[in-house]
Image 1 (cartoon, helix red, strand yellow):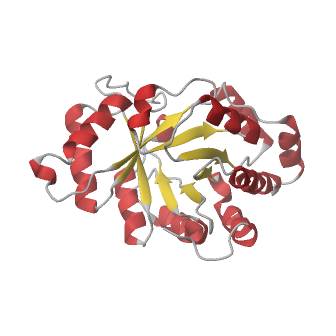
Image 2 (image 1 turned 90 degrees about the horizontal axis):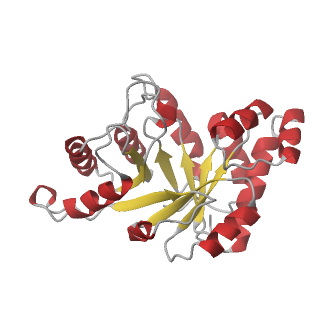
Length: 266
């Protein structure tokens, strides 16, 4: 945004050894994105490394945040990831626990808190000489207080929601000086609403929005852009974490028309 309000777009990482679609998403969304979030084996399925895709964003001239989950890693594997990221020049992470895996089990060795501590300590060690400290993010849910240790992060992503009022209540209940990014997801269909309600018990999707989407395929994109505009106007957030799902082309076109008066800033 031209007023400092940032749009961080999530892209869908490849589930096959082909980066063509990821590159296409990056290219389409670049005019309206200040940075890209790359998920890490999200929804419990294997994808191309978030760090590798983050490097692809960097190669295309963009800014990236690589999501890294604790579910799939032991300490040695996590240290490998930090070294790989430093070699690529990837310097921002969002640390998450990770969804229940579709195959295998959680390692149980690492937590998000432990990953933050390890990443903070890493750049003080000899192998990382000359590497600037990583910027680290955490997530927060709508219905629980943010743990005090998360104040040690550099930014916060609040769980996807469809109510500006609910985001403002979270801000009131969780005072922090950290940049906070509200989660906005395009509702692509009424069926998607059903799946989200089943898989994320805390999520509240207005019936009115579901009805709009059921009667018009562009309604979900319009609603997401309206929500972004409303969140920006509150002045309470550093920006949004936008999940365009399959509607990334429509989202980019709509944001260019309605929210930006100039090129995106990095």
